[in-house]
Length: 257
Image 1 (cartoon, rainbow, N blue to C red):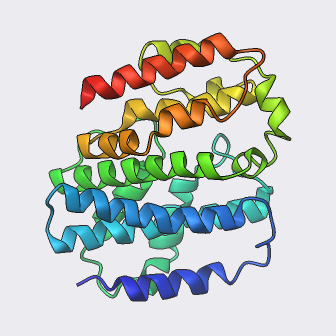
Image 2 (tube, helix red, strand yellow):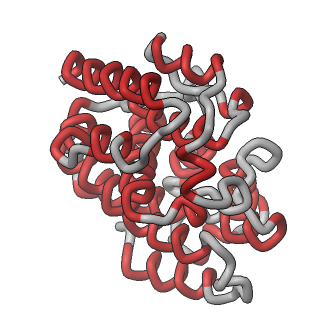
């Protein structure tokens, strides 16, 4: 059986090895990790999964962003374009053997590896068996749920360190056509299309279109994430477009649930 207490202790020990814990975003990522694990177990529970799969979902949640800490140390920011932190996480865990710090059996290795490798991709790779696909979907939803929480609670400079300098930069930003049109088509934003500061914010909102489970959408609606996130800022240059985006997202959620 998976021992989540052992997982948490091993994760704490790993994190404490870093000497850049004062860097913008480091503590945010620590808190995010714990919330994602909780979200994953909540979703698995609401789906009526076995205790084993609920614990496995939690384990994957704790490990999904383990590559982020070294990324921040090396690049001084989170760089999802040039650095695939999910791939790096799987290399740390399975090529360098870090997984043995967290669990004593290799029984779940293939499921863990595939779930983590796919958690940040635009689409889940084809050909996964039923259980691998299930856990890939759970971690993707759990990650996105906490992305919404983070964006509500944190200062914008901590959310996008090295990318957005201050609140006014976001509020005065334009939205690029490709990003805006993706939302209107009910599609996730391609991270390569992000040009302006507001594009990064809209990209987060567009995660709605990649939520896999009705249970996850209900959590989003219950927390009023979409309205609160859009209304968090005053968009002097893009107000009409942001209001349209809010309407599209809310209509999508209502349609799906």
